[in-house]
Image (tube, rainbow, N blue to C red):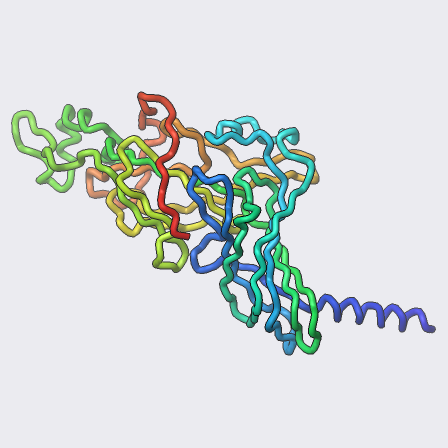
Length: 340
């Protein structure tokens, strides 16, 4: 007769001690973290945190720390060429799990709507070659009438996701294809499709006006989510060069970012989160597919070309099969100014 009652009391105690709950969400910036491609790791992580505990269980005056749990890709190379042979290769995944902890944030109050917190990992950054990445947040402090409670939230976030943007303004998009300026000048049929029409000089033979569709140096201000503050800026990116940033975002949901300046197209991107995790069922090391663009490896390549026929931005074309590699070989990305 006493056993069912004892079990009930035990369950009640367990429910009481684990009643505190937090929810982790993306901050208004739209990413958890972002660094330049030349940096070694993520020293800052922004999280939206919500008190998801039962009514009356207020969280006030406590301390927060963030914890990153991960393995390492021991085959990682800075030019990303290692990823060509990663899929399924468990030998590239360090068997030991690592943990890094942020600096604490004191005197924290959490409500039932998200509050943004910035966690400092400068002492132990999250590496770019992290796999199986999880973020945990630990709250210690008042929970309802309990003075010294501990609440933990865990979230599986994306692994470091690379986004490359190439200045390919030496190409012009016309009728779903991309061409070099000499190719357009040599083809009257293409010149007849060019808009605005005053970009064509009606000579014999006709030719592109010298002030139209010339390769440019590119300036950009990239924003994400609902924020108007740039995540990073690009200054005077030369033609045939590229930038690369690395970000952390939610699993399964593309991170939408856009360029405020919009000199050439595309001026926005939907970055697919990279997945680099061990599949426990198949016992394989799954990795998102790598691609190659104009001398560099990456997962998400966006390429800026001129629209030469006034078609809508984002219209599909064949640039992936046409744009020629750099003639001077592979080059490192041009550094950006990170404002995150």
